[in-house]
Image (cartoon, rainbow, N blue to C red):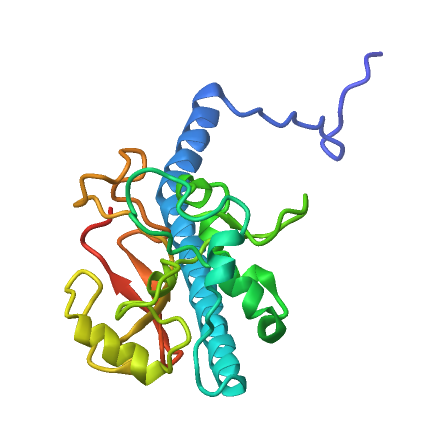
Length: 241
């Protein structure tokens, strides 16, 4: 007598597998979602980095303020460091014609910052701008040295003139810059309108900027900027991509 499955114990049904078409549809849906969400995630990541950069500049501004309190309200005068750090002064050909790198400031202000990391924007790591000779500056000659990336235009030459801030009070620095009447350097209305530090940028409107750097900036479309009164903010710049 042949065994037959009873109604009480039916034979189990096998689970049907995905068809190739169903699998391709799922993959296509995932690809579409990734294409939509990836720019959103990238934008959120860059926004966080830009905020971290702004925080760095604010801390640098605080360090400058603490320094001036200890030195008769005067900004640092370390023209010696400006020319003696590894790589020397202005080790490139072309733009910028001076050397706005801030390695000297990282060394001078370390007693107030206790943190070299604030001298480098997180968006610069591994990028073309961050590795440019005009941006990257070592603070000493040791194998484990730290590299700074921010620019301080008013400390860009080892000379004393109206556009340089070496050893000046904040008011004198702002007044002298206004007296210089140089639209390229900027004509500030006061201390709160006088730039102290900025993240790097390479205007596409300047012919002498290298083609590999032309129009590039740390943050797309502009830069973070620190002022003499220690406030910092984002500034759009149509000269960058």
